[in-house]
Length: 266
Length: 290
Image (cartoon, rainbow over all chains, first blue to last red; front, top):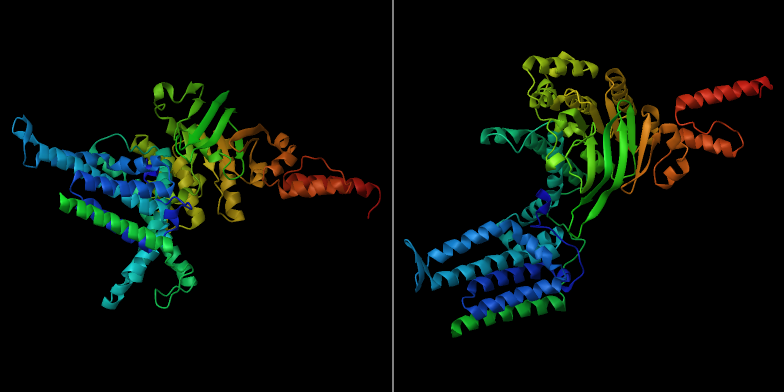
């Protein structure tokens, strides 16, 4: 069902991770991504995963949420792992016709599986604990230096805020339209591929119309409140760096350094 | 004869997640063939969830739904053709319009029934006439119409399937008083003419008092009562405690009663109020004018 999508969803809370500054959380997530791809030995991967589990534990969110975020990508994970098994040279473990499975291949497959899983869980930690407004605010602040190059930072952030805001609304709307057309006897599950593609029209047309209508209403509402773009705009919630933010950043840098050192020593 | 029946119907949203919520809780009711039944309840009382079980859009978490005495989920599969026999008009149905012309939009339902072209045409024209949709409007794009016209086209789209039971979810929501009256008039006329069973979901006691024969009152997912309208209004104290508004005129009369001007308790439409007041005045008139 459409409702099972949790990517980009925010779960309000009051944990240490929730209270961290969004800018720092974004940077820490980037550090973590570098960390997990830099890690190349069993110990360094273990260190990166430990870092992830530690941050997840600090969010005080239920572990089942972590599994839910992984559910939709299981096929991708499996394909990635299988492909990796076959494409590495090394000592042969066994042979299937022309395909040889090597120790290096298996090792790489396992690493890749852990990396992709950690990547998804890691970015979920960010989105689960940061409200869309804070997230885009953070991105806007981090990209602010690009304004010098005439890059429309504020506009980009505003577009992201609006897009994120409307994902749940449009999902709900789609479900309603599907039910309404089903009640008129529309059949989305049976028939040839061509018939099923045609059956989507009664969903798409009303959905587009409502999206345009909402866009128009939103634009009007923003204009009524004198929205004039980012020039001279102030924020209600000022972002302030707190000691906890520095500590969190320091811990992640230390973990990154540790991962690199372990790799070099091996 | 009963046409729709539920037995211990329960529906739970998001089973097994932290957001688990019982929307309909152990509801057993029987709806007789013919007549208009109003389903009222405050927001979140489970009325919209309940009606989506009647045409099989939702599958009960437990309990059964019977149509003409047969379980609609026999063997775990929905009864074939059920959605053409139990029509459901959603809230703000104008948002489901999608075709290029009004004619084709009304013909969408009958077309899905795989009826012959001639029959479809006949049904579309007949339903359109009922709603005062003329041939010029049939050729227009549904998106050129006014809000009230769109609403009528969307309702006609469901009625053209000629279902035996037709369910409306807040059919008058967002319309002005004149539009509301028009919609209810058409529904009432259609029901009386065809003998079709009509269910109307609403939170307005005022509207239901005017059109419904019987009322189903829902409260927090359970059935509060299912009885003729006047009986339901005799429980007006409990109904207001649920957060539903008793019709204004009923409130005026209960206030008059407190002032010791005694009228019949069951006044819930303006028409019956007019009658009561004229009766009262003529009685008083006998004692000398004031």
